[in-house]
Image (cartoon, helix red, strand yellow):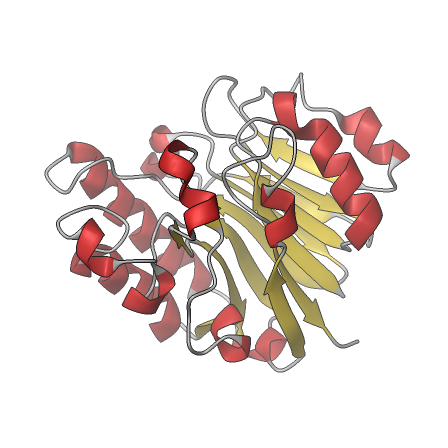
Length: 255
């Protein structure tokens, strides 16, 4: 089973890139973030033509998350059903091939002194509460743009980001709550030394300079982590015409 996550930074612009990518890599499940579409505008028919069922939680101009699955899509659900949903359309879930999949788009936070930063910490805390509800034998994966680089090795230069979001102690502590709930940053198993990024700013030639961060994560329950075989970032998807500023993160699991 191959699952992947990709912040496409507007599916209105990036749908041809998504169609091309799924044809090349054949993920069983693909989670998308920042679709910037309403549910009515989401290209359900186009995705069906590619062999994917889908669910989307979107509000239009901002945010938007989706799950595409070629292995079934059962028990779909959108949002937390709590006040954290006021922060935007940022969570969607479904069971695909026996695995409970969640596509997550964590709030950016803007700056450490912003009320949006507190919303980010609150949102992550709520996600941790939800994950704790699953049992030890449940296979669960939370994929998406977490807007947090877990450790210093996940950024190109930690000194350049001092005092900024994405690398603060508070955000990393909030992410650690997920680990304490029994979820693995499974990509780390296959790339323990870091230096592999999933996002590069559009500005100042950051991609070509290698100035990136790994903020797109795949968090897996212990039961699912046992089946992980490999993980990679498809850096080539960040190249070419009208790319997203994020690249897809892919994890392969045994049957």
